[in-house]
Image (cartoon, rainbow, N blue to C red; front, side, top):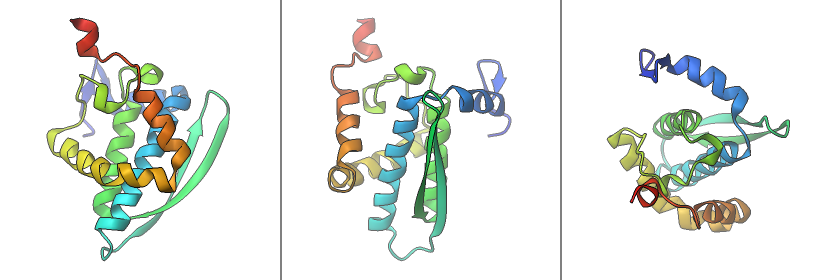
Length: 152
């Protein structure tokens, strides 16, 4: 992954730049994915060894930050880090649609299947544990034109 080049820049260069540019939309997406993966891990990986993780959620547009403490197994931690990295690299930035409505599939096929499994399991359960975040995510996806619709 260290040698991966995206539009002439290394991932590290993009990530260091994006850390300063992420606004409320990307931060909220990262938080939503983190909670979904946590719900999935609790429900599906009950007997796996878990590691406590404190994730700093930084919203540079409003100089706000907060920490979220979760417990994830190694497999789910890896997926969370991958999803967070993909959100940081999203070419649409703050104007992104929800991933389900996007025509650009930036996840590797295996990771895409894993995140779909997480979302199918955790999506309905998110409404009970994080109702505001769930509703905001649903509203983010409503009324947006996908790239396919814009192109035709």
